[in-house]
Image 1 (tube, one colour):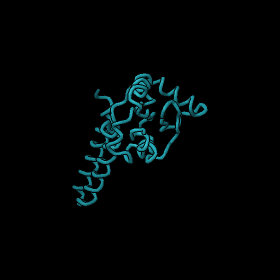
Image 2 (cartoon, helix red, strand yellow):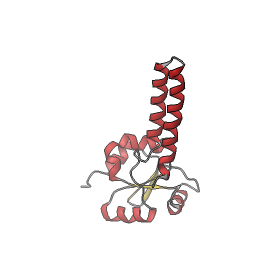
Image 3 (cartoon, rainbow, N blue to C red):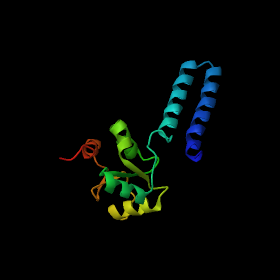
Image 4 (tube, rainbow, N blue to C red):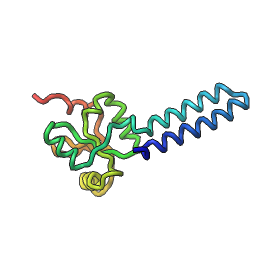
Amino acid sequence: MMRPWIPPMLLVLCGSAAATGLFFKGSPGAAVALLLVFMLLAGVNSPLIFPRSVGALEAQHRSTVDGRPVVFWRPGCTYCLRLRIRLGRDARRLHWVNIWRDPAGAATVREANSGNETVPTVVVDGRPHTNPDPAWVREQLSPRA
C-alpha cells in the first residue's frame, strides 16, 4: 500500500530541499513557487488523483452489473489525467483499471487498439473507445432512457 506514495513523497522531499536552498540564498518568492510546482507534481502523481484501480475482470463484471464504463489507464499518461480532471467527481463512478498493474487489462487495451497500449481506452457496453472526449464519457454515466 505504501509503494504508490513513494514518487509523490520523493517529489515533495526534493522540492523542499530545493526550496530551502533558494530560501537561504535570499529568494523566498522563487522558493515558494518552486515548492508549489513540486507539490502540484506530487499531487498529480499521487493515488489521490485516480480512484482505486480494480482488475480488468472485476471491472468488466461490475460494468455488466451496473452499466458503468470501464476506463483503462496508466500512471503518467497526460490524456488519462485530462480525462480524470475533466470528469471531476463523476470519475469515481467509473471503474478504473491500471494497465501497468493488470496484465489482463493491458491485453484488453492491446486487443482494442491494434496491438498498442493506447490509453485512456474507455469500454462502454462492451465497445472500446480510445481517448474519448470527457464530455462524452460523462454522458455515458447518465441513466439511459
